[in-house]
Image (tube, rainbow, N blue to C red):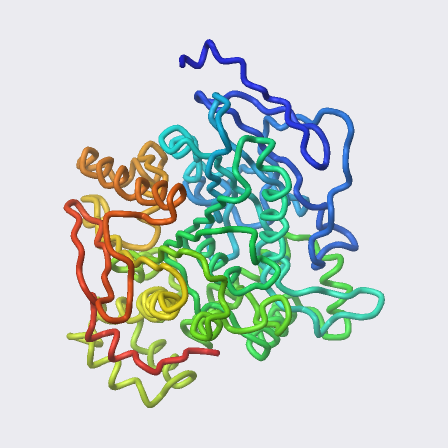
Length: 505
């Protein structure tokens, strides 16, 4: 049916009040809908609270402000000119024009290391998925940095308490909003698939271990998760104290400072902590991350998956071929040098150091060191999740090996984030155009068709198709590349060498 002949219903009566959307690129879109109360004033560093309902029709034609963060490239972050505000807990919905039976729902969690990211990023435009897959697409903002992923409970007072895991709790609140409201937008609340990349994928593997999230989503497709990136309580307390030192705030005044400091000051201090201090003092750990608090996140995710306590839902999990290369060249936060790797093993598993490094020919060459850093943060814990979860629920493993000519020219290869355009089937974003800058667009688009097709098939049927499920006998893994293939137990020697590594938990 031609878009010009459709009279879409743009006013939707949500459980909080009516919202009016717009038609964009042949789809209906609603933007900037609040799913929780503004986390400001007395609600800063508190768990999300219900929205104050409204009665007048609310304009949902513009994205809401993005969480406080440093300006980033609009291809994957907020953009340098994006409006920012603590009042950022909003959700966006995109749906086809035509009415139909309830459609599968895809909910995206953006990445950015828990310090940057925005649901309004051009990289996360879900229109292509909506059009091709006949789905309803959702993306939300959640709190970042100190306001969302640090533990300041030691500075609480009876008059001014602080909660922990507020960013994860925002995501749970958004998923509850989806359950209450998505049917009004044409989605099926009984068929919700969450997907995300990097910190978004980390969020999902953590949420699979959060009791409050049980039943809010039914399938998970995670790209470049770092499931071991959750700590508690010692490291989060240490990092909270370090942040106070960076801010020049004595412990006695920490509660007041956390309640009143401008978000910009917190963002600046968090950037110093995560980019300069933590990578040197605790290589391989992330100072801004989910906290194993014994309550909201009761157990470390890797341990929860192994014990069968993660939500037993179908899971697709994978990484790129050389996760660490991006960080070595552009964001130096991983253990990708001999000095950091030595320090990492001294903090974690000293007895495994020689065994592990022997599995990386040429170490301590730069390439081998970069692979060690990418593997310990992303690949190894993803393998651990796959092997654990496959004992309890259908699980599929993949690896993204496609490297555009531009990425190879920069020495990046198939590295972190390069699978985002493929997941959305959209190479018209700035990241997608970079990948096809030196040619190869036909190959990239074909790959995107297959990769996003696996995601859409998974959302609709519960299986990505194309390759067998993962088990610890065969460890079947789909390799997405110019020509796809299926392999068994890729990097077997590395996997065996890391056996017994527990990291910072």
